[in-house]
Each structure stands twice: as C-alpha cells, then as structure tokens.
Image 1: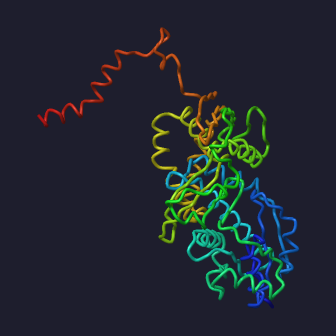
Image 2: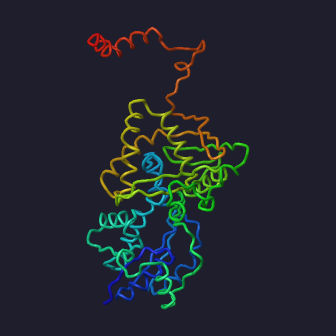
Image 3: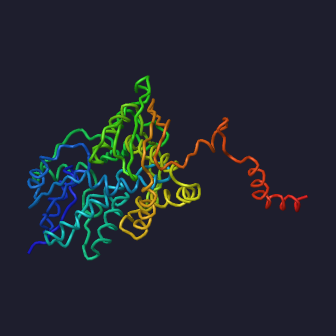
Length: 398
C-alpha cells in the first residue's frame, strides 16, 4: 500500500514540483488548498494538482473561520510582533495545519507535507501545530531536503514531467496574502537601506497618491466583535475586514517596513500591508481603553500584546498559554461595544471619536467647566499620601 500524504498546496512552482517529487518517492499525494482570502481564483487548482500527480485535490473556503477563530482573538489581544507586525501570514499557518491533520485522519494518511524552506518561520509554525494536534503524524518538508539548488532546476524538472506550471519572468518578491494582510520579502527588499519599490505593494496606494481629502470611517463593535462599517452591518467578519482593506488601502493606510527577528536567529527585512487590520487595531484599542478601568487596562497593555504576538509568531497557537490569554481577553471583550470614528489620510489612521454604552468616561468628573463635580480638595490629600514615599526619600537625600 502506498504511503499517503496530505500536502499544503498553493499551486505554485514549489508545491507543484513537490507533488511529483513525493509521487516519485512512492507517496500517494492528496493536496489541500485553503482559501483564506488571498484574492486568487482557485477553480483550476484541482485539475492542476491532479495533472502534477495528485490522486485527490481539496479546495476549501475557510475565510470566515480564519477571521473569527484566528484574526479576532489576535485583534482582542492587540498583538503586534515586535510592536509592528500584525501577524498576517503567521495566523493562517495553525489553521491550515489543523485542516491538514483533519484530512490526514479522514483519508488515513500518516504524513503531512508543506513547502516551507529551512530558514523561514513557517516550517516551525506548520510542524509545531501539526504535532500539537497529532503527535504521531510525520511531517515532510521536501524543500529542505530535495536535490534542487535553483529555481531553474525545478522548472526543468517540471517540464520533464509535464507538470503544468506557468514559467514566466520571476517576480523579485515573495508574496504571501490573506484577508488579514500581505507579507512581502526578497528582491530589492533584501537591502534594508533601500526604500521599498512601489511595485512591491499589492493592496495599498502610495500615500503620496492617496486622495487629498481625508475620509472618515466608523466601525461598530458588539462584545469585542467588529460588526459594522459606516452603519452597514456585516454578518461575516471576513467580509467586514475585506471592506476595510479596500477603504483604508485607497488612502495608503497599513504599510509596515521593518527588520524583524526570525525564529531561526537571522534578521529579515520584511514589508507588510494590513490596512483593515490596522484600522481595527486602532479602533479596538481606543474602545477598550474607554470601557476598562485603569488597573485592568494597564495590566493588559503590560502583559498581553507582546506575549500573544510572540506565541503566534513562534508557532505556539495550540498551547494552554494561548487559551488562557484568550480567556482573559474574551472577558474584557464583553464590555467592548460601541462605535469608533477614524480619520484616514495620506497613509495615516487616527481615532477622532468614540462612544460606548459601557463607557467609564464621566464628563462631570473630567470637565473644567461649571459642571465640574470633582472634589478638588480631595486631590490635595491624595497627593500628600501618594507622594509620601518620595517625601521620605527626599529627607534621606538631604
């Protein structure tokens, strides 16, 4: 009986060659392709996979599951890797791994495979996620071990085996896209001193070419879930995110340029586009600040965003730590209802208004008008007690 493997399949050169390469090694290959909002037509994928040697080809639309179960918890944690990256590609890997494990069980396969390289982060994310869900499955990563040293060798192999791949002038960039954003690397971007060429960007307009007038957008939330844009309700979170991508993208919002620390120990220059995600981050943070007390909000900011971003980036999605952090942020999200008004202009997004039925803002306490209800005399005594340790320290210094 042939060894059966479920392959994460994009339909590009690498994974198309992998299908045949694994077949030549005696494997029976079933391909799995996930629609996570990459904006590509996937109807030809099954025929292409079978023409490459696959015995079965699965294409599945998982955009809403991706948005609800992966993007939303990360938004609630306000997780940004190294304070900048909204984890666009990182988030899809555990979900795709979950599907690989599911179909491996369904088709009685003992192996899953991916097309990641040996110097990237995705190999870790795929493999840790798979093993967390089924430690008995073996993971194969052909790109780490096969004989091909250059793209030209893969093209020649494809031609020799009649593998249907489009051989065109290779774009200098490596691009990974889903509904949460776009990750872009390679080519001229490998020089961290060089400004990213405009042709590297996929879904955002140059801020210089963006409209000369700002656009205002209002995002509504119900218990921590984005539900409306400019008064229009969305039953599907994935569609709301895609709508914000379009709105914010035409104002040049969401571009990120950074040198990040990869898991394997090297620094990598990456650029990202995440217009919708960054609008939601700004809105959620502002609304969360409005509805949570100072002690809770400060604890959240000090402990959650960095740790959550690290575990997503480092392939630790399926861990008790992530579940525990989700329980915390999920509790806070119960109060995050209301609307946030944001201004989009020439690549910048800023909150200009917010309101919530759970708001802790009390105008009579904050105002400096005649409506002021704050006890100013209490401030004198508060300052005296709060500053007592410094007063004692000052006496020692003198």
